[in-house]
Length: 349
Image (cartoon, rainbow, N blue to C red; front, side, top):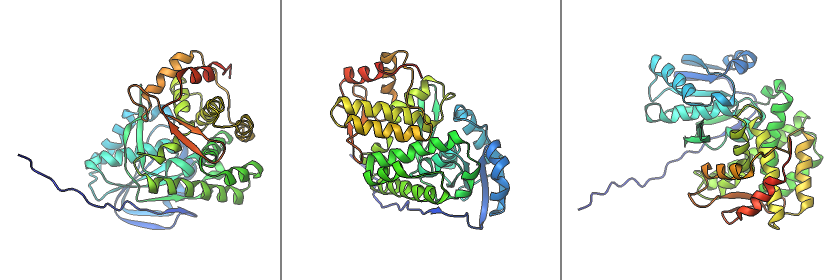
């Protein structure tokens, strides 16, 4: 005997990404702005001049990737319970990728899901983390291994926040822009090679191109069952770098830059990318002072950590490898010895 539950239906999770000054908005519900002390000190006054609500609360969590954990999630949830938030309430993620990921995850599990909005304040979060609905937190096994796909109701990318960005944070964002170009758009990559992203107008154009690229991919594959996995180019290696350094030495974009170089070197060994193309990518990253080397102390241990990657299975590791500049492939047929030889070539950083 079988009892069928007919749940097939179309759910419209569409939303707009606004690249402009934040509009003045009133929310007829309870709203909590999730941020950290650094962002609050720099920009909270500006945001509060734009946003009002029936009830408005500020929740601050510690700043840094090492605080992207269950303790911070509990802090957010406890505050929501204390203020009696309900399913019509809303969260606003106001910060970088760490804040965006945790706010999205907290909103996905609070009373089985409430709405949230992304207002990213770093270049990296504007071009990558705020778009696409990936949410989560880290644990001792790795980065973003706990989380959910939970799309925001909207994303507001206001370029004014970038005026206070430190040079390392800026470079970390550039790494994600380069990632988009290498994987999907050779013309965009060539534009970046000659462009000065320190120019605000040129930077805004680059942001628009990067966001449009990611939006197109997410629209085709919201929950990463296929093409969206290619956006993890540089991340398979980079996440291991972050894990080995306890998330304290490198910013996420810096680790991704290292990971891109490792992936490129693997592609060169497999005949997917020319050495000249790999050098061009490396030079573009170094143009913005991004690290491109890393001291792999034990290549076997490094390799074994790949198995914790969400894209891998128990017996095979999935790699995202560039095919020249402007194309990319997903493969689980990369020989172990090839990757170990790449890792063995990395010296002191």
